[in-house]
Image 1 (cartoon, rainbow, N blue to C red):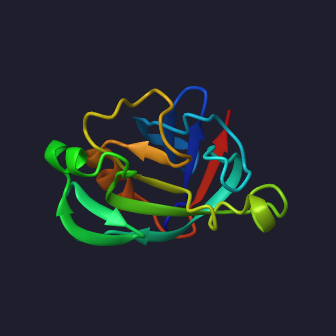
Image 2: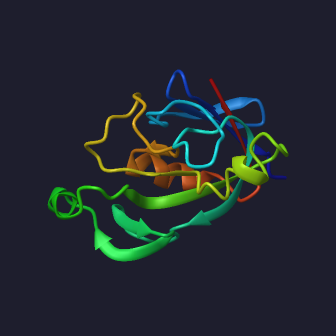
Length: 162
């Protein structure tokens, strides 16, 4: 029988921990929002509270595949590509799309994490982990998001806390 997996993200500590039942099985450095925690639409903050993985996107895509609008572009990220598109928010390799679980806190209205497109996703290798820097999402190293993606399922829970 499959044990439920649960992700805990510590916004202050910039860590993501994966548990199987009560056992810690992986820990990763991440990068959450440079604007800090918050739930408001267009705030570019990382939402807090209970979430679930609503969708997994990127099966079979190569490491550093660029996604725009959750679709692979066919581009593989390079520093030269960044120079060509300096304002792009780089979403790479895999996407775990989160949905909030608490009405009025992170689900529904102008605080809906899913409608805010809050993901756990890969980032360029030169992006610092362990330091806030995203536009609201949870960034991970590409090798780490591939590993995590392969370990979790849609409907696994994700708790984001300070």
